[in-house]
Length: 137
Image (cartoon, rainbow, N blue to C red; front, side, top):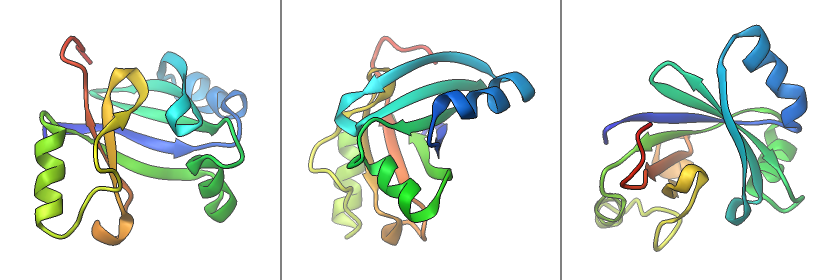
């Protein structure tokens, strides 16, 4: 693990959440993108050396829509930056705590990501994120 990469926060609508984080708290909006594989729209805000990702579902069957339905808005996951996601996934599997995916999937910002189930991580949904080689976040 190299560092905390970001904190993912589930929101119903980016347009309703952004004024608090950007305007009232003064966090810099780095951009908004759609991640089709996750059925989510992501607003990335710079928070010091880490980021906050506001996550809006783009479909009623997205993981974020399901989280909002069950728990309402709030922290969805913690993401840790890793240098070798495949090696970390293999280590988790060997320890009997496999990632939710067999292979990494595409995430925001060109990252490769996977998630570790909260049952394997003390009740916390953990994302492992490997940035693309040319990234300088």
